[in-house]
Length: 326
Ligand code: FPP
Ligand code: MG
Image (tube, rainbow, N blue to C red; front, side):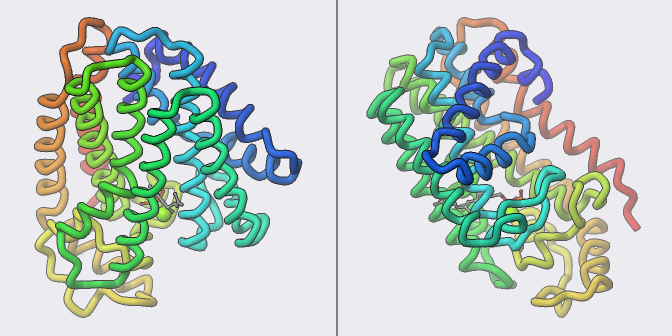
């Protein structure tokens, strides 16, 4: 991941994407909306999704023109807008070390600022990029809402199936990575086959990203995460790593778990095969991602895109080994 984000070609493009994100998030007629949206986009974030859009564009031989820069900015704006909604639904008070909009302004204002960000991305895509790109982005907002709905519908469901968990994360996370790669291919006027290949690569990587995020929620310490460990357990999100663990959690899961119950559930999960199973699953997804990639003539971008899935899995695997099993 660091390699991608540190590539000079990508960082040069990301500087332009950043300026575009700031312009778009500050473009409301209402200064209070600009202030709220501006706070969210300034609060950090790795800009991984737009970086992948830029890498996919360069990989397909397309220079980083205004259209692809705007498309990448729209992808990040959709991500940031969806996080505003997510924090509201989670009643979260902090993200990336900053107070959430719902904590700062109340739910109503946070909700409409999130809406503004999603809508503004759609408007920029249709006006400043192209109709096909706008279509991809409109479709991904539909998928985000569906994926999040599926997660919400399964909260505290101890009979949740792996298939349902997979369907939810495909919509709520993988779809936006897929769209980020696909818009690059659309801007590059790539063939239908190359579009499908780039999209599949993005989706597989997006799945890896979410599955590992879910694993870290159950294995990393609160210090490593910057938020309380076991958040998903408390909130009733029984994620794919938990469902693959084979751990006996009978009688432990449920609403209003005590700190002791959360600690015991985490202990059992960490003592189970959860980490090995999850990492192995992700390595399978990584193989699928690489197999999907189209032929890439740009040497540097080929290295970055081929290396990204395994590098991220290795990074998370190292983190999980650093966590003492208590
Ligand atoms: C963060 O994941 C949340 C998402 C990836 C997507 C959230 C999507 C929505 C709230 C739907 C948005 C609505 C529209 C209309 C697009 P997480 O909750 O697993 O991770 P976290 O620990 O960062 O909160
Ligand atoms: Mg959340």
